[in-house]
Length: 143
Ligand SMILES: CC(C)(COP(=O)(O)OP(=O)(O)OC[C@H]1O[C@@H](n2cnc3c(N)ncnc32)[C@H](O)[C@@H]1OP(=O)(O)O)[C@@H](O)C(=O)NCCC(=O)NCCS
Image (tube, rainbow, N blue to C red; front, top):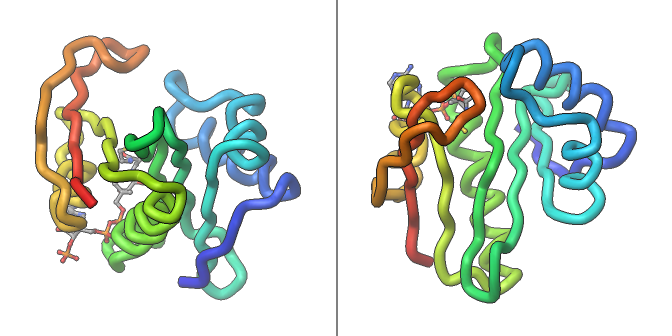
């Protein structure tokens, strides 16, 4: 997978995949643009096709967070999520992060497995975290 910074011209593709995958609990177009312009959004390509993306930001001086991680269905199971999380973690480290956190749905275990495979541990359970009322697991990695 080729990983590069997302550009504003990628915002429409990312937003379209948000709607397709998450139906009710997706990032608005404005949030996608904000991620690309002001926070951090890396996008992964396989054979020139968008395979996934990861969004992240600093929450304070020491605390990095990954707040969106998507691999499109036909590219799953190839280790691309781990590549995206690793790339985002490296970028957050260059911004001074001492730790990186991520929320992932409890019900959908794959997110937890992905973050665990990247060296994160589960530190909290947060009921009602998502619009859908679903519970989140807070995962964290010390850098
Ligand atoms: C979660 C998601 C990003 C995983 O993407 P992926 O590219 O398939 O994940 P990877 O192939 O990089 O998997 C990394 C590790 O996660 C674990 N894993 C991934 N899919 C798994 C599955 N279906 N069952 C069990 N473990 C799994 C494995 O430990 C894997 O490591 P391994 O290859 O050494 O076995 C993808 O399914 C997705 O976009 N889902 C919808 C959005 C979402 O839920 N995002 C995460 C929460 S923010």
